[in-house]
Image (tube, each protein chain N blue to C red):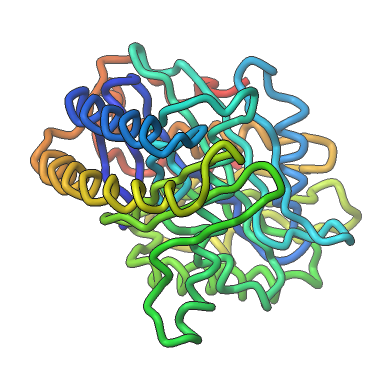
Length: 208
Length: 156
């Protein structure tokens, strides 16, 4: 839930990167942290196991001055992707404002991707939310691998609905597409505060 | 729902006064009102160069992570959580509307004193949160007259 502080003229928004294990959620945050301007970003905190697998969450904050008169603070979180950490994923989703669902483009990860997407919907229900209420974008990650699942197939699996959501091709490892993804979800979140784009604007069609 | 949607200038002033009073009486180092989503609402005191946003996110996560343990013990959740360090400790107390009172304190004071005043302060803060939540529910949605282009860059 967005928090508006009129005294500090600040809006705080929580964005969660969700997806199956090893889909590249942490890599997104690590590369964002390396690439965004230093004046905008806070510390990147990673609660990982010794094998660098996310145990609790990764976290970083980004400040922008997009809306005049208000500082916007985006709080970026990742969830642990491994199935055993479902309770943790539910906790991290608490108070979420926007979601980036990271899809692994490997063919053999399709089942995990689909399971994770279903798990996201279940965990949102646990938090009394749904994908119809929460703005989200899709990131088709690892597009640089050999023989990735084709785009039309990914769109069919994850974006096959009347109101298509924004989707982005990315290679989080090289940094390609990660800023576009974040800007995509940030625009969706800020649109409801901006008169020029209209309140509660519907999500735009797919732009792969 | 996590936390409250907004804080007016007046709400913020009242909360800051309660936090300041609490800090003075308990001799703690830093105190903050946060929600379990990790949002920092208000703070008082000096935590040095520590990133308070990160501190809030980690504390909120740490508190929420004990819920399952509480359930196993037959409690809905724990009302307070205390981490004792060699020199610095932290007390987290549950408040209304999924909020938390975080207090960082050093050896200058002790857990008994901090906890005593934290309990008193939590009553005052709960009343503030009740008021803030009611005004938040009645408030017009925030709209800002700005040009947010369809494909413009927000973060670069």
